[in-house]
Image 1 (cartoon, rainbow, N blue to C red):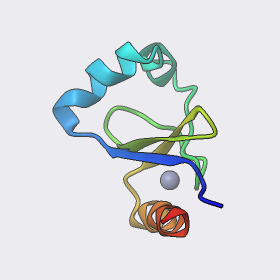
Image 2 (image 1 turned 90 degrees about the horizontal axis):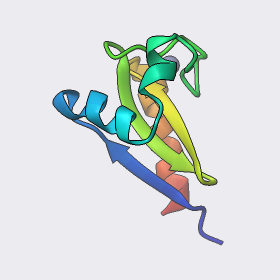
Image 3 (image 1 turned 180 degrees about the vertical axis):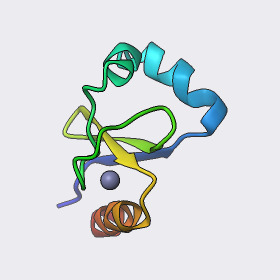
Image 4 (image 1 turned 90 degrees about the vertical axis):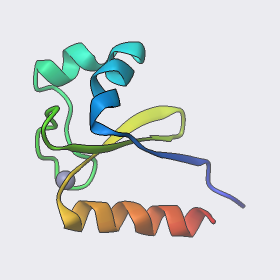
Length: 78
Ligand SMILES: [Zn+2]
């Protein structure tokens, strides 16, 4: 069965607007969002990508190791 995974790489200039739209900008600014893979605190500077899994927003930081894990999840779903 196909895993529902909606992967969206988001451009730098869009990140703030999108976070605001989904109501998470405040949480990011408060340092309450963590990278899904390394649990590092997500900021507007290190946020690489937002994706949706099981109807939840998940965050990936800009570490290559985290991005690689993210692409592995994505390839599993295809
Ligand atoms: Zn990370």
